[in-house]
Length: 474
Image (cartoon, rainbow, N blue to C red):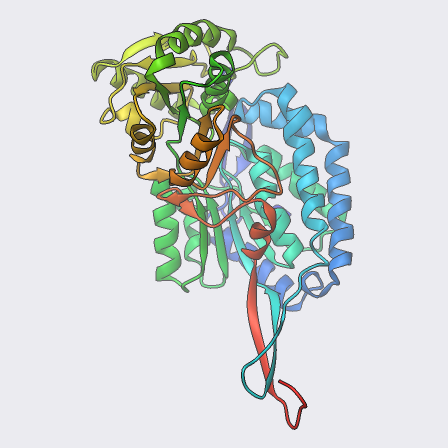
């Protein structure tokens, strides 16, 4: 439920198709976060939500999901206008999937069980899984609806109350979800949505002494600040899903046409604004030349245009800042000596559109090979042996996702066990599923979204121990 913000400040939210203002949105800051946390604390300590049977929470979550299904078109439109996401994809995939995420975790709400322990002494013990309390959920701008429920749904199922801060770039669908939550019957204070900037509202959540946990998805730079604020406040646990510079390894035995399609999907899907984007593509030397020729042709099939047009495959970058950031990296690639195979320029006179871009002759020390660009820019490199490919793949501070394209089970097994990343997709890419844990290694963060591991982020284990006397067995 969105609060009436204290300071009365507003800011513009922008349509990336045109660069024009969609609306002015209330801007929350530290005082508003204090109010939201207070409401969440009262709802947790004294309200019904954590005390409802899991089945009762599940019933309300199912109603919430049904309401989302009834408003698919409006929600998909909001994410298209606010984030530049493809409307056809949002309507067919993104919004239906968030409703199903709610249903998935609703199904788990009445199955949160501890264990009876077999003690080695004359003691009886069992564990309880309890909701962790008030959680702060900080949402990124690249998947405004999906990531909202990746965090909100398991927190609701666990019995937590929450303060949700959507990204300042893409607040509109979050506000609609807050409205639907009230209609679904989620009690007051359970789900508080506060729109504001990361440096104020986000920082206030991370440092708040009455927030029991923070889950953040975004850049590694900001993730550090979240973790530091949590440590300096009440030592609240954090889970962080951060940046990536994910490798795709394509071996000589691969079907070249399928490999080209996967490589393009890995980097150009959602205009490259994906933490798991396959931005570093390594092709074994035996098929490299053929791969490059076919890639240059097929990259042109990724048409750039208005995301409301069903024929469009690449929409605009989310805002002017991101647009300029991506273009600056393209210029770095040129200056550092990489060869521009395709794209490399703005794709329209208005809006924040960029041509899908592929660089060849990329070296490992180039900025376009090291840094997360978060745009439609592929760095293409060649390798000789399996060992060399693994070495290249792991030569990054990140470890979020990876891809392997091969017909050999032996190669797939060896490489998947050798890559230091939280997920390895074999002969596919962006193989996300609500039942499959997703999260990073190294500077890509820690903690898992999706699957039952996500639910356990919002629970804590309590052990209960009592003596037993004159029992015939331990």
